[in-house]
Image (cartoon, rainbow, N blue to C red; front, side):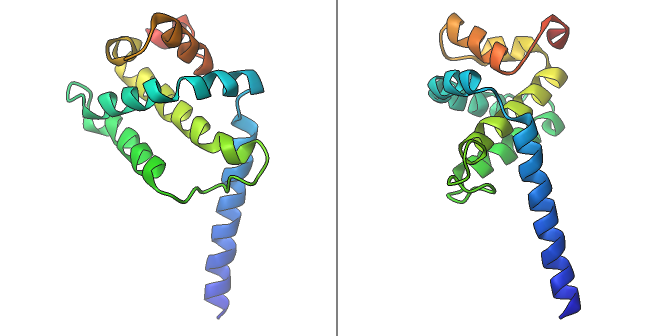
Length: 135
């Protein structure tokens, strides 16, 4: 019984740390509003990046895990939690895309972006990609 309580307590602590991380890394409200308009193009972008075999598997693996998470009907952070509940998907997409772009290069983002140039610029601002991130 003590082991089970320890495991459950550990899982709750990890979940609470995850929620805290999401809260700290959450985008501003304006960025979140912009990001929601980019959802269809961003979903296509993530799918294209996941299938790009010129990017190493170790770089693409988090993208595949992200796709699996997004398909699941259950979120790690319930949607009824203000701001963080709805922002968790956006934050996770942001973190995974930033990692992939740092490893594969910003040219991959441009190559696979299915939307408008304005949308790409908005996504780059939302991901906080500066000149130093694209080299």
